Length: 114
Image 1 (tube, rainbow, N blue to C red):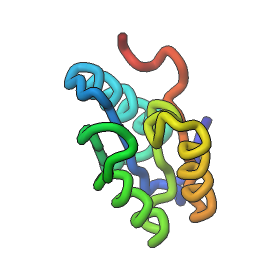
Image 2 (image 1 turned 120 degrees about the horizontal axis):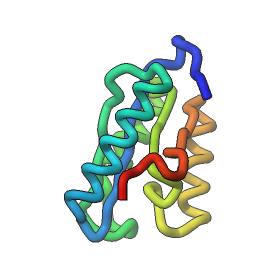
Image 3 (image 1 turned 45 degrees about the vertical axis):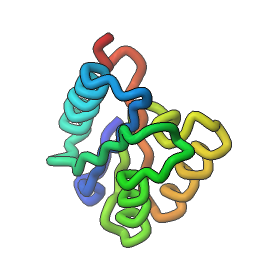
């Protein structure tokens, strides 16, 4: 997959609960490498590791505000579960991002180190 240079404003969103520093770093590095492979320079990194998806998540709130303002065109995530473990909620978040014109790019299977 290649993205046009006009769609270069990117963000990485991660959520890890329960918090696991090594898993989070593994996912972050894999997403940064994937962003570079797609030609997305210096994506902004937003991380929530404050607890369950039922709690307020400042990183997600910031991501949604950035998308609504047109400040992000591409959102890289390890999978839709980063938005929420509840599938309808995860789809709703992805749908909102799409409605702002942002593209959600999931990390291809096998790219994240175990």
